[in-house]
Length: 504
Image (cartoon, one colour):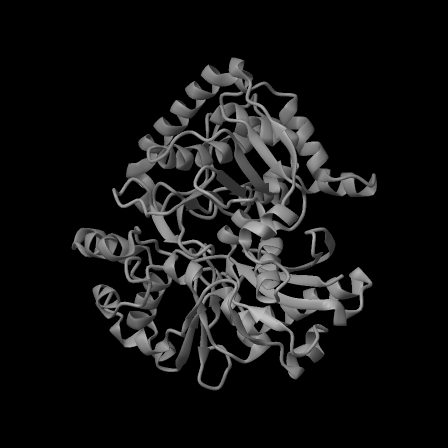
């Protein structure tokens, strides 16, 4: 039996997981990453510390597994999309890593929308421009800290940086870079004219060679082996944007399926042989299966909002649950289940980390009275997050038939109560993927293809992906949630004129 290592870097944790050839998760290690917030709207991380955290997670996963490291056949990566990780000519970071929740470049998005740049860009990339995309952040650095770009040799996504540290070889990868407005989606290559629309012609030579997700991009070096415990010389596959990794590990292999990931980001997606170019969806990018495009609607508006609620408003309950040997999530699920949706008129906008409505929108409770307590507020948080997903799904369904079911993964998938709300709002059955680190599993699948264990993605999916349950929608809740969603939309509309007052 051979084993595959998947390394996944999200918004708050670095994770490493080992899987056997049948997709069984043997071990996982999760190490928190520190977010640096030097100013409102800025989210960064120390890249050297990030590498140490990744090495620690890999070592711990191997130690927990009890297997002989020599049985590990390959390694690959997934990571948050967008953001920016820059490396200098000496191989050290040229700046702090910038996360996908960073909003410092929001003014560039507004400027490019006003001066027609947005329309010209869309003709080449089939994407809207986001403040967190590499092009926006690079433009901000060009104008505010030009010395950073001068000392930069390589422009990476987060997973590319970790792969670089493991192999010493510099590559970019299609799923990440095509999702960052850096690639012409017609030619599938870098495009100087596209970069010129952003005033970024000068960075062309800093873009590494492009690889597909399952391509071998070097081998684990002796130095990296010593700090991670991975065998020196095993192949490192390029890896993929975590949205692709979660999609693959959810069984997303043809145009019939749809999936959602409810983590820090609200990810909603399907794949197609052709991009959607009518402007009704925000993002088209190249999928990890060659020949397919990922049609995506996403925003940082999902389960990360609930983590904020627990961290700031449920410290007592969290400690109490710990002392009793339970989980705070048992409490949150019980609270939410005890309140019927029609009995709670609170509306929560899940914009604590960003928005799918306005770059400056903020998290908000509307309708609070002295009657309400944390339980009602939490119910509103669960529902507000689902409503944000629903907003995205409605846009996607303009361009395709309603699926027979939607596959859900991420933190929310661990709560039957929450999954039921998804099903009731969407009025579509929700398939829950077997509970494991699916971002890391998607990466491990790429590693398996690179190592010759799987012939292709379809073969790998048939062997490794398992659905644990399906939650059916309840028709009697349809009108209740339709009315609540309409109120949610009206609150967003009503608050839209005031967000600029909160830009600092």
